[in-house]
Image (cartoon, rainbow, N blue to C red; front, side, top):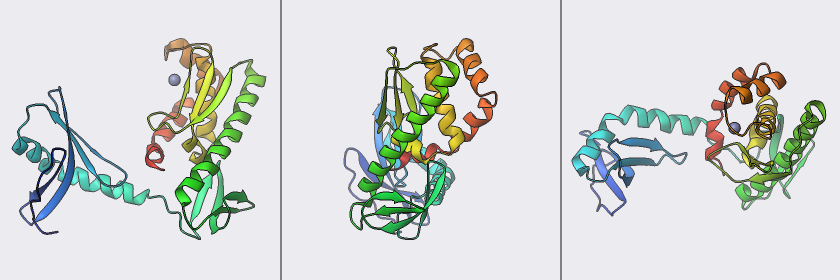
Length: 232
Ligand SMILES: [Zn+2]
């Protein structure tokens, strides 16, 4: 890429990163904090959070120092890119489906998606799949462990997999449909335990452990799927 310094708007800038004429486009967010942070979005965009008074040179030096990390994050997102082309395989609720052109539906071993607007169609498929799966898991756990909850919602939340309100209203992200069975079961158990303990105190974790003695391993596994939150 040529080392062109384009006009810097208030929030966007292009800076020369290394002398070999490479440039990193970044988005700048200023915050009343003393620290710099860096994040790479699934689309590969670099987002920098900087102190309100930080000079441009300081910000760009920070980015230059993080060059390797940025490259590794971009590689990570490329590895986990969502492929919705015909013939691609996708795992939904623990089962593998081959993507095929057609009216949006899960049938047999195929996930049918229309030629246009595939992402929106997939979102709807995942929403329905997540609702069915999480409902069944909640019902099973309630019957087995005597829990009760008031309602189930499927949301688009990116910040968390699930939540439970003080009134026992449970919500899960539609992206939970893309998780393996063990992780989905853990999330259902986790939110149900919140109907008894609203915090994450020792009593809460004891309750989770009663239901899933192996929950620590599953929690670790769940972290590997953080990239799903960047999808759709
Ligand atoms: Zn929790």
